[in-house]
Image (cartoon, rainbow, N blue to C red; front, side):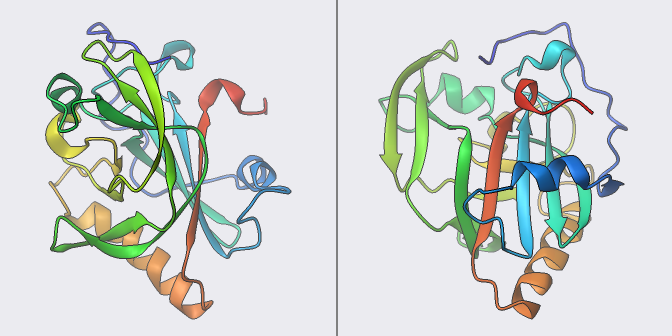
Length: 208
């Protein structure tokens, strides 16, 4: 369960965006899963960068793994909404938090102008109260996208439930294009229209 904690601060230099990592553990997570056969996939690991893998709301404490064939790269990001939208939800039922599991994205447009991955199916979400506590569950179209975040430590207004990539040079800067462009090019080259996304809790990863 996500918590608020002002004592922990992630290392701003680690992991470096696009670091190549051993694919074996990540490939094994897809075994028998929906989307396993797709050439391009993504995994979000909630709480990977925090002590004891306990997610902390409001900071970039997660890791996203982009998988193009057997090549896996690691990107710091956030799979949880920022504190601004937790405290000021656009929906009166509370801010959205994507539930762990498999979700399908597709290339599209975020905020009317930015190339990103957008919902390709109904998603399962939690609704959070202002303390980050889960108060309900919903299924549907919520505009949850996979897109660029911003610089610094705080997620801030960059996510109201979206999955975001930390971008040290700024919103939809070079880091985002290093993530998005090769992924969509590989999808096009393999006649792939859907990006499978597996969201997991870091404590549930197999030991290596």
